[in-house]
Length: 175
Image (cartoon, rainbow, N blue to C red; front, side):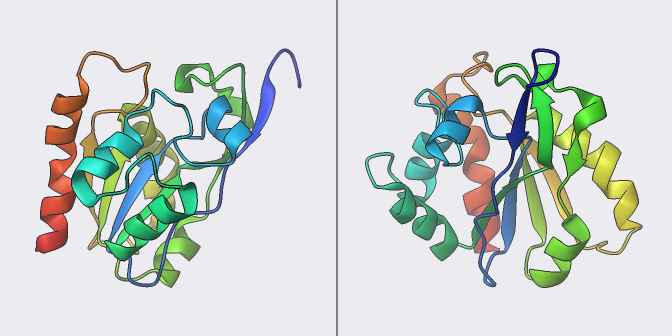
């Protein structure tokens, strides 16, 4: 801990060579880090949404949920590999501490991924600010879309509205 900020290290991606879409968050929450699971906070809507779209039910163990996403061509990762922040809010990230994940390596090794879905506006802003320019148009085929955050801190939409908005991922997998 430095100046009241705790260190946060992200997770390896959930991904396979068959992945066609990447869901991109900002950084795991404190609850996720403690559980060592993406979207581990009990009130985060991510897994209920994945249950509605792909059958990755919250009642399944984490490995089963990951396998369901992989089986549906979905990858999950975060923009940040490392940061310092108090608590879990993206707004509290110490921007001088961030380390971005290696997207050039990632996209080179998972060439079937053509669509990125941002889990909220902060993930999109950080990616566009810190990643997109570094890629130097190396992956011009990538399509981007921001979706409403699944975080419990983003309460302006209910679960049903979030599921409806996130349906675009499932629809894009059919194309």
